[in-house]
Image (cartoon, rainbow, N blue to C red; front, top):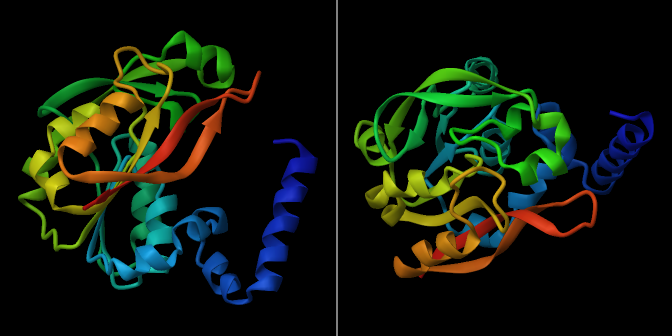
Length: 247
């Protein structure tokens, strides 16, 4: 990380805390303010979520922000990478009603090969496509590890998932397989935020039109994006965190 962007980021965070002092308490809890402020919205608070399923939780940035936004929410956070899972467990260990689960989610169950990238957030059950490697060459190097794969519906049946349900899916191209294995659970969700791409970043992944159609067919409306990633060379949008709300 270069010094100037780092200093700029720190100054922006300081400015937000000065403008809204209550954010200081949130930041001191280890919550990333950028993530917290994206979900600390009235319409999401009005949904009165009881359970968050954080699928592809990494080290828990989204879960921590959600717990800060909705202190009473129950969180089940799923992460297959061992090192990330260890950090996730540590980050959630002192928060009531939070459970970290060391599995990947998909369309079947069993041990499967997983492509762990040097840029951990780019790791996937799918092989990385050339578009991804060219756009983000620092993430191109991977090693294959073995992880446990489960179906969302199977594992949800063993958990105390209480409605209304909020689901966040960030699985680097494996979104449609998570949906395939979670039909019943997805049907219970009030809001789903799912990372989806406009160009193939992983081999064999479904793109935004297929993900949009899945939710549209099941009574969800597309309500915009929470965040987006651009191609560094020309700024075109490659990927978004799409918001789907059940009608």
